[in-house]
Image (tube, rainbow, N blue to C red; front, side, top):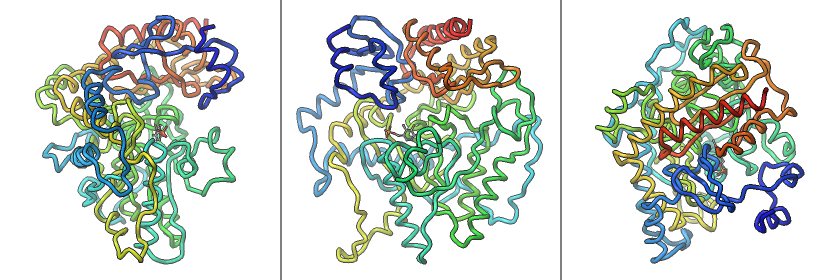
Length: 517
Ligand SMILES: *Cc1c(COP(=O)(O)O)cnc(C)c1O
C-alpha cells in the first residue's frame, strides 16, 4: 500500500463513511487534476463524474481561477470581515446580487413553467380562494450578501435570519415554524439537520434538533398518486396524476394557519433535491408551491447549494437550435434554478460551486426588507449576532469572481449547452438495462435509480449495496462518482467533452451489467 494511503488508514476519519469498510481496501489517493480528469498517486486517471461531490464547475486546474487565486495571494490571503471590508468580497457581493435578480439584469425569465404536461388532468384543488399572488412578480429582490463557509452554514444563516425576522415582524409569542420537503437535505450542522428529513442521517441526532414540519415532495417515480404503469422514460413525463402533491402543500399551509401561527418560511431545493436521491421536480411544481407559500405569508428560502451556478443547464429542452441560441446570447443562460423558473426567493443559499469548487465559501443572499429588520440603535441590540472567522475570505472571493466571469463567457455557456445535450442523448442507452428504473436529468445533472426489475419498481435492499457496487465497478473503469443509496449520480464538470461523456455512460452500462450478472 502506498505510504499516503497507509497514513490515511492510520489517521483520517472520512465523512459519511463506514470506516470498517474503508479500512478493508487501499483508498484511491488523488494527487492531481486537470479538466474533468483526476489522477491518483499511482498515475491512474479517472473521470470526475460527480465534480468532486458537486463542487467543481469548470474542471480542475483551470488557468483563469489559478491565476486569480495567485494574483490575490500576492496581495493577501485573508483579513477579517469583523470590522473590515475587503476588495474581492465587495466586488463579489455586487456580482452575486446582480446575477440572482435576473429581471434586474435585463434578461427574460425562462419558459420552463409554462409547459403543460401532455395527458395531465386539471388539479384536484383550487387556488381561487387565495389572494392572487405570482411568485415571479414578488417585490422580493435580493440586495444583501452574508458570507460564510459551507452550504450548512449558509443554511444556518438563512434559518436564523428567517427566525428573527419573523419574530420581529409578527410579534406575539408563537415560535416561528419552518416547513421543508420530505427527503430534504440542507447540511450537517444542527440547524441545517433540523430542516432536513432524511431519517437515516437525522434520526440519531433527534435529541439535539428543533422540530420542523415536512410536506410531500414530488417524487414521481415512487409517488402513490401516480397511476401510470412503469415505463421506459423519466417518470415525470409519463406520470398520471392530478397534482395531489401540490394539494397536500396547500393543505399543510392551511392547517398551520388555522393554528394561528402560519409558517415562517418554506425551505426547498429548487428543481432537484440532491441528497434525497436526485429527485427531480415535474415542470410547474415549483411555481405552484412557491406561489402557495407566498399566499400563506411564508418566506421562501431557496437552497441552491447544489443547483446554483449553471448546474441546472441552459434551457429546459436542448436541441441544436437551443444550443445556437444561448451561444449567441450567453447572458440569457440563468445561473440559479430559481431564476430559470421565475421564482424570486427571500433568502438564497449558495455554496458548493460558488468558488468553482476551489475553496470553501458560501453566501446567503437576502432582501432589503429582512436586512432592515436588523437595523437600530446600537443598544437596541438588533444586530445579527452571527459570524465565522473566515467570513468573506479574500482568496475564496477572488476564486468566486473568476468563476463567475468564466460562467458568463460564450464558450462556457456553449459547453454547458453541449454537455446537457450530450448527456440527454447518451443517457437513453440506460433504458436497455432491466435494473434501471428511472433516469432523472435536470440540466447537467442526472440521477439513475437502480431497481431489481423495472417492471415492478422493486427496490434493492440497502444492505445489498447495489449503488456502491456499481460505483466500485465504475471506479475500476476509470470513472469516479458516489451513489445515494440505489441512485447513481452523474454531475460532471462543465468542461467534460462529449467523448468523455460517452466514456462515462458506456462505463456505467458495463458496470451495471457486471454487477447484476
Ligand atoms: C451539499 C449540500 C448542502 C450542505 O453543504 P456543505 O457545504 O456540505 O455544508 C446543503 N444543501 C444542499 C442542497 C446540498 O447539496
